Image 1 (cartoon, rainbow, N blue to C red):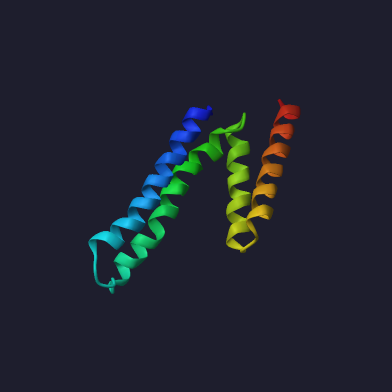
Image 2 (spheres, rainbow, N blue to C red):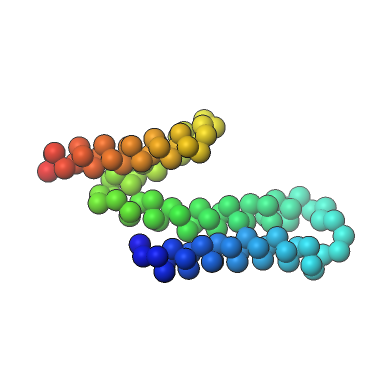
Length: 106
């Protein structure tokens, strides 16, 4: 991944996050009472971020299996509400060990 592609990704994430938050403030004068629309506006930036990050998680390593293992470890630890540092370090360690294991097996 090059610096220019990372900067483009950050700019897209900023634009999506900023536009969803500000358009609601600029276009709607009264409070939003609909639970569906409020939930949609709240979770939209997180879902866009997840869609942009998830393919990179799988294909950033040498092996697809290492990316899948790291993603599964991250999902399980996040499900059990571990902190971001613990989740990221555990998934990085998992990818590292799976790649080492695959290197010795092949």
